[in-house]
Length: 371
View (spheres, rainbow, N blue to C red):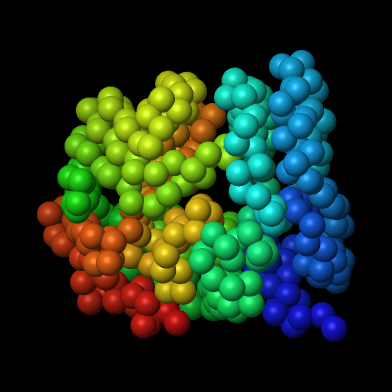
């Protein structure tokens, strides 16, 4: 018997997240072995008059491919996938790989070429900018292990998070959106962190299940040269298969001038990918009430209640500071008391302390209001 929670998730993705219309071409891309959700999505897209297309990827195969990739091969690969993406109006990306570190031993130069030649034009330029898209993880034993939970408990957690009433959350975001649009100066403080920047004139964007599942953030972007000070992240982050921890950045006039981590050399190699990689492309506040602890999965971790993320690399067009890069790396700082606490100020007014919004008009985004 089909799990009704899967059918509900598929209906939400097709009907709410990307709002499929008759005649829409929709690419469903699965990384991993999950099949039931893919079948439900095909049925939902067809039910709404769309045309579903499916790509299934095995990350262990991709690893072998990338280990032997040449520039010319990547250019051909990017060209035909870019042409396919141009024919799509919708995109649903499901990440259900068993090993988050599958690409960890691909040579760094190969991954850099892959980011620049394939991922940036196909996904950052075409899919992100020109399709209705949504990306999600799907529960498996590997994810449960990363979250330090049993598989069954993790599945219950997952469907609570992903089948949340995102329309209700969207309405609760309005006061924060309005405030961020009006804000000039942002200051972030906490253990190992004292950072200031401007978001004046950049705007803001609500994220309520239209692009990521799970969701729960409002983002903006620093004025490119305005970032000064230090931030120390307390959430591990997997990038190209390697788990980075204890990342700390020091900024001068927008640029990361010092970067340290558990592998400082590897971290700086990522930041040296191109000029834009040492500048910030996103600032966001996260508040999904069901996500409380990191699990080395960006789609979940960047939505943690009481968190923020400050992202080296490419800026989104919706909140654009002009920064361009082949990377976009969401790094997360949790500010709830059990993670050391911290404060966020907008124009010298305290907005959030120890992970809870303190302004009355923003109380609707605290966990008790959103559950």
